[in-house]
Image (cartoon, rainbow, N blue to C red; front, side, top):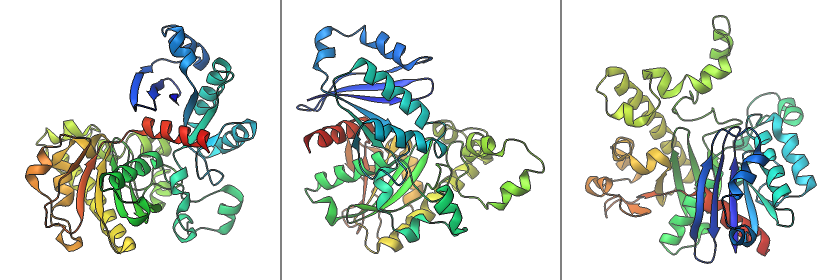
Length: 362
């Protein structure tokens, strides 16, 4: 089966074409400066030979928000599109462009099945005591205020990879998966299901990120409205690492000896360690910490700072292994560590392709 995966943003479209029999990536790339999703896709396909276009069996779409309605990938029909549209209020920057990508590809690939894979779906197994906020109940029932979580495709994918690595059923494992990129989130996975995650109703909650603040006292927003405009933009685009030291790229921060850079690193890793400790208590028994995402996969220094002096939860890092990750899955804990520490390269597009194939085979 040949599956085209599309990730439609406001001004770009990422794509990958997979041969699912061989797990081979046939084509991949990014269309930049998109003004019309349909015109951009038509222009892309004009560079493909006719046999490649005709070989596409299905299209898998990344959709950011599935709300409470979608706990798994689904075949797209008019009812599904209506729900995605209804959920625009929860993801105003992403769901509209996801819908544009769906509409454009449906016009081009008229007789092919299209599947929606939601970033929030994996976290729909969180219990009510976790996903509800301690706010007036009317906020939840009338306005859908609750924790949804994000990065679900990545957390689910790397947990599946870890289970496959050990040839164990995912349902037998308790994992803490740590996705660190410009955005970051942690997920507690108990017996294969998400039971806690750091992002909340929006991706702003949780860890200190590249430009997002993560957890703050909500009264700060009310207080700062006296002095600043556009608090939403400041918390999402000018906070996090950038707010502390003026830079959001972890490589720049690690290569500097400025005191503010060190403070940024301390705050960044402290918040991650805090969540790991909390999730270890929630899970009771942890089989592994799994690092993924651009920073999680590539920064041995960040992994070392996070795992330092974690004997209390059974983690002992092997510094030599931590410096040399040569495969898509690398074990970086010592043989005596009670909790394994593993680096796994995430592949959200391949996860979407797998999910698309699974939906069509049901």
